[in-house]
Length: 336
Image (cartoon, rainbow, N blue to C red; front, side):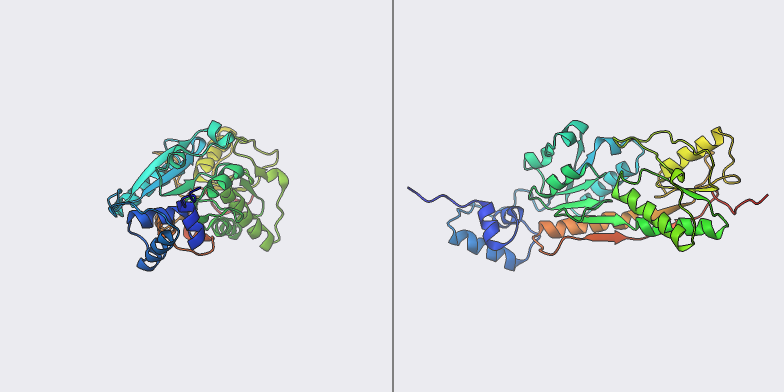
């Protein structure tokens, strides 16, 4: 009986790298050190792997990078839709292709791998919009280089790039406190995403540092269990300021407050987060925290390309900073 021919996965295990890296090495693709390529080719020969007749790179020197986002996060004016556009542009500028796939609720629920992975069309994957924990952990186990963008999970075998969400919310809340506010609420479903959780923790830290009470009824939900935004319910006793988890929610809260007879910012101050989307004509300019979005995208692409080239290092979270932007949606506390 003839011996079983080794697979790329077998070679990868023997070398201590990924099957994707082995595939690139035997196909002659660029993006890895000569030393690593030589090591892979030597091991492949030792194991009896039949190398392709031609070392020509079938991709012509570029990588095909999948960009996966859940359908619920991909609205026409959403922050994540804008991230997708900028990601594709950044990849294109560097000579690579960005392949966008929208994850349907059914595929997410049934844990169906994206078509880009199932068909072998992607060399690496950037995942954003934070699907369910079960789903993104399955993606991380699929064997392809993966970067989580704008969320993280320390138990998943994937790198993550996020904004400095905790610090941003801390800065905004501290600013409101310096302006005399003592009754401050937070708007956002705390467990919906890691970003919202971190923004809540930044708010909570500022309140704790200043010996201010965090009241349960002032933590206001802004979305359904499935992730879509919903109309918030105002508490019976209103705080004097609201720290919202994103600009879209902040604008929704301003509309609701005005509908209920409150003046913004005279009666209730409101802050957002992300500095996106830009307000329309007549909208109240929002005080918010502007994350360095271009820096996040550049770092996510750099990290993924390094993984695709076979770089071996512990998985981790990379945090990109930002700056508060103070406009007209908040003011000093109005004393009677």
